[in-house]
Length: 170
Image 1: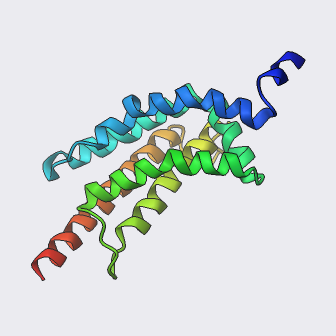
Image 2 (image 1 turned 120 degrees about the vertical axis):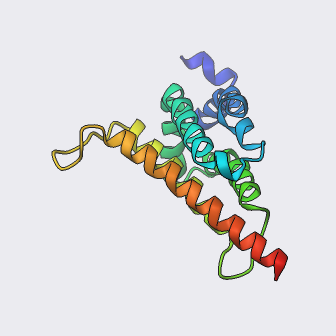
């Protein structure tokens, strides 16, 4: 194990190297699907498909992604930057699905997309960390949470499109 430090200055540098192929896989796993416009009549299914794909991606790489997020939460600046870099395309593509960058009140697309994607990422983190349902939670709580995330994403995109159309017309 000590030989590893011949190649990497510290744990963060090693982890960053391990995260490169994980980030590359994200494009194929779930990001590419968001690059296509999701029509209004397909929006429900596409949101659910995206959330399910993101969940499978997280499950496949939970160890690395959890460690990255733990280090970022503990103040590691390079891990914070990596986490931000990983979510930035998802935020931008969500804004695109909403109808583009509208920063006017009452609906700021970028802010809504950032909150949504941060929430999705946090739920994946919590689930991957082994948080188990309590007696008060239904047995299939994960499916319920994934459904809720997909539904919130759908509602935000629909609302964003409505405000984009209104801004264009008005």
